[in-house]
Length: 470
Ligand code: SAM
Ligand code: SF4
Image 1 (tube, rainbow, N blue to C red):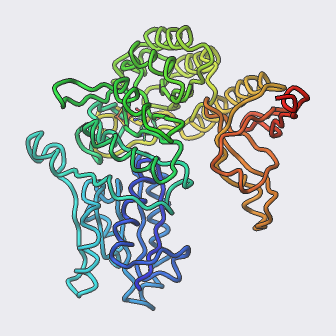
Image 2: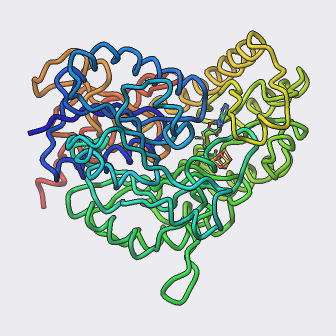
Image 3: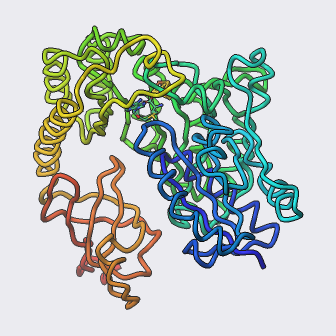
């Protein structure tokens, strides 16, 4: 039985892609192992969003150079976004790599591995660049093969990612995604429903719908147009499914019908990730985000007015080309005003092949980027902590996901264990419980909180005399 090791970096899309690759290879008889030493085939599922993610992969490849000399039959593959972006450059930088496959060609991996094992030498399959054909041709070169699943690769047996669209057409000037993931394409609602029904029948209780701009979802079929709000309504009827999340939202597409669906459908999480990127109109304009700060503010106010208990999270990029101290202060002000549950803060990383890298100089020094990054992080941590304090003494309902991070480190398999789960507004809750509670929805009373975690105890309802009287 050939042994497969796969390492995944990057976003939830990549986690789902790895799940699908593993599923297709298991069907071919591969066994999944947990270290590269035991493996016959080592795959890296890569990310290109920032330079750091690419550097990590190239240094991991560097460490395999000697192993490959000692074991020439080990197959080394680079798949995903960096494979699409760098293509032959991967072979030039690491000549012992056998396989390069872009994210739109992952279904070819089993066949390509067979060819390599049969001695046909290094193989590469990538999709067309956006300039290499008309829209339809480029779209066709990005295929997704989502119905294949592997339960063991999921975050937990009770949770699954479901892709509702691929690609992106927004072309923010800093971002490599539209190039490496191709044109935006929404999947038919009926396919998505069938996939979710199957997951629910297998015991999955929570799904997260994935798309780069998930709220731009639009598909015409069955005689009508399906928006994300329509899809949520359709999935809401599926028995066994209890929670539906979706990421990532584009601010301009946060329409009232979607907010109404989040407000009115109890299975839909009251959690919205809506990245703003900057609090300065001048910077947003250079980023081609297509909205102003006041339009983002209006969206936020409308969202909170319609769903008062919603949790909103955001992304910020610091040190984008030409960002002045005033621009940065405007971002800090927006972060404070926005009262986000959490924000992901990134230092701008120029990406070759994007408009940003072509048109603007990366002129904010590294130490300034680092300082701005740390300043925003510190502000966000204070806000998150204050926000979490509001939960002290309150009862929340969580889906129990499994042992907490610290319990996993202990390597103890006794039934009593520290467990972790999430609220409907995506807050992490840690409590002492029993392994058989994993996968259940439980009421928890919160007694402590820091910026990242709520701590609680399971609510036990005492049986009173009125029950005995029945
Ligand atoms: N599609 C999503 C959106 O529009 O928000 C997110 C896609 S991207 C993979 C996730 C985040 O990475 C972005 O929101 C942005 O903050 C950050 N990002 C993207 N390109 C970047 C770059 N070149 N340098 C630094 N951060 C970047
Ligand atoms: Fe990148 Fe912008 Fe598309 Fe998000 S919306 S994936 S940031 S181009």
